[in-house]
Image (cartoon, rainbow, N blue to C red; front, side, top):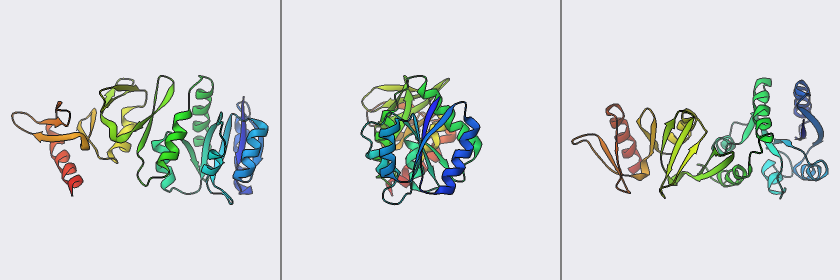
Length: 250
């Protein structure tokens, strides 16, 4: 059973979460509550929770201050926020679990299932918090967190050359020639990378536009990368790809 700590300064929100977690009492035991980041740090030391439900906006220090104040983060975190703001984008790129207020029981159930799977498979979750602290400083996140080999891999988005659909995940090719077989589904990574100037060259491959040296359509539609590798582009994606490259250069 997971030991849970709730950190939220809003009493009504805290009570609502307590009631919702009561539906999962066979999996979760609430061992404590805190109303500020400082009190949360004290309660973590006191109770050693498995999971922390953490509000972002609190007086006297926010949820990120709490995390930075916990040198040994041996617990999973599910962020709770009433705002669909820039922090949400940082969560998505950093593979961080979060819930929007008012909390929906189905979303809570889904988030708990993820945590339970990680806790009972010895999944190494440390890298995603490093990525979160980096991404939260940026208007546009620079780190992407993927899952591979039972741990989180934190990647510099600028070092990704292309990503390719695999039957059970995504192949990620990096600028140094190495590659990662991530378990993340290709369709889940596509929208994140397309926001960061990646373009489709066929239905199963996204390429980093900053890695392109030139595009040629003679005798076939080819991309020459900066490392001189040649990649073929499907006809129906060529026009959009050219348009994306022009927009980057403006």
